[in-house]
Length: 535
Image 1 (cartoon, one colour):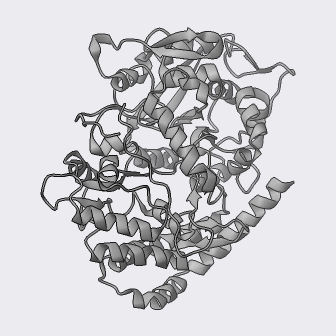
Image 2: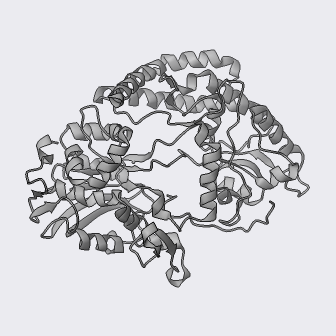
Image 3: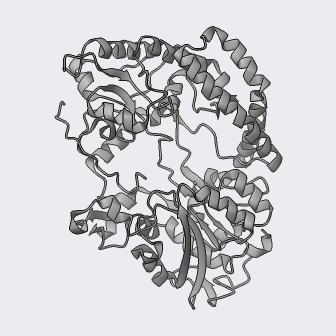
């Protein structure tokens, strides 16, 4: 089992690094085609999308790895569709500010792409008439997306606002398991100490204690760090599941009852356990001050026993073939029916694509984006054109192979010059066929670990629901203050600055700040969502 570790960074594959007037949407043509304001008719299937070339403007965030208009994917899409795209991009960090300015100015692009349009923004800008309702366009001009939504009705419901309209499209991945990267054990430590994976919080505590006292890295120094984190952000949701809690803020249990997590007894159990680890120096005392880079530096020195990351070798070093460090199996606590795990809802963002009311051809725009919701288009946009980064081994089964990167460069950096799909959540779909033959052995191993350890206890904590403008405004104001208070008190409880004997006073303060109102609003929204999906 034990292997030597080679240090070095390995790039993650593209798919794993991986959210008006109704008349504006109505079709005015025949059952097979509709008149567009420019470019002649809009075809409902096949290419080109329009008979004569048209130009549409797109506003998007960019990782600035290469100009979008020169990328092979964009050039290929223009040849296929007869639609030229004029890109207006902003750096990822400043994009939210630029997006707000665009909406405030009223000078809208035709399309917003990878724009992370929040549910509140969809409701606000949609009801103000700045975004086109998309549901009729989907039904008439998006066969790929319509098929997905028909097969996954909860996804359709989760992108439909309270006024019955869809204003933005999601990135869909119905096979996704993680909200965040999971926890990993240092396999070398497990082997050295002769320990099987813990199954309960008591067994976990005993193991971490042994890590602290028995020198599993064998360097003769007491430098092992049993558990580390970055402000608890990378372990919170995973650990909360040990006490029966599915999510960090609010969630619906198996009976459909909504809970506000920070006032639950399970949350108190979570705090009590971490406080015990802190007091015995089993939880890294730099947790609330260190960066992710500092955490990884400790992993590179083989000091860490339990940690969170996308892959274990991202923290511990090694190669993509290193599979000695097992994913942590969530452990049970004194609370019945534990552990649980909050599963990814199947949409990484529900606001990745929108059409503005000034768009001259919503039909053509919908056809253009629908290509990314089918196998061919998703392959093009995630992997680039065939023959550049990949080729088929067997086209009939969609099995692919990677080609040599020009000049021996980094594959992910090369991919970033082929497609805009880099560093941002773009519209489209993830299906296994996209990476058939391209997945590494460790990627397949992670899928197996997910299926064995997480999927059997996983449940989507809460569907994507839309609130009315008034309710959204109220929730945003309440959570702004509550989140700040909870974050401060979490750190104080864990480090002992605030004794857990003050729990009742803490809960009383949460209720005074509106926590029960959060439950009331989301219970009503959940019940409404649930009843509509049952119809």
